[in-house]
Length: 414
Image (cartoon, rainbow, N blue to C red):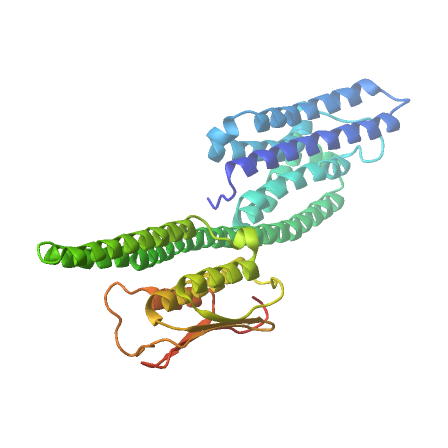
């Protein structure tokens, strides 16, 4: 049938139409009261009371739950009511007003025009263009049937009547086509917006899953660089201790002391890693202070000489970019502390039209073309974070010549 619109919209639309119908009838009654103030009011009152009954019935139907339960049945009946009542009530009940302006048949046709226009709006809103056109033409069929069937035709001037019907039809078609076109465009935009919202929700869900996956990878790297290294070294030391247990008690004692040192260092590193996993200091300290604290702490643990250049204050960059800058710096510096065997560490961050982060050490370096051993995720994690932030990460290293890591984001819209 080409029905459009949901139930809640239908109820509001029909209730609005009901009140518009009643308000129009009240205004019309006030005008007639002024016209017939010195005339036979009983006939006028009867006319308006009978015309008000369908409007009250329409209002009652719009407020009952039937429209929600059976919209495909109740809605067409209500449209038929608001269309047929203004046309058929006068001929069926023989309602005539005393002589006055617009009291003849042509005037009655003009009087009912606003109510029929409300019905037209409901049809143009709820149904497709074809049904709207059929409605505009169908009202004329009902009008002609009422006029010819009731004997009113003998009292009218046919040329005036036909002219009024023609003008009404043209107005209905023009207004109905425009309303239907606007409603069609509006619903298309609503469907597009709904589709965009669904895509956005899917994107948000995917991004959340990706974020969780990235964070799990980071946790894996943190635990690998702390717990795994500590336990691996401790296992080697204990195996060596067992080998010397019956041979050299002094060596056993020295190895046990080293194992205790390793255990305490591993415990301290594990606590630091767990603290880093629980929360980031970015929210509390800001990017610059958090980076400074991170670099100083790492340099103290690795006995590194620092060359640090950071902005004087936090720049206006997005939280995602700040998080990437912090995490990439954290992973790069931890790699220097644990693997590089370096003496100097240089960290430089500049933020202007673009973002440039440089981390450089004078450690043992490595060959980037050589696949990393299984379980080493730091470099891969930095690459992933750089891509997620919309930047580029370059790594230059050579065995025995240190490592340089540069993270850049081009453009001013960070």
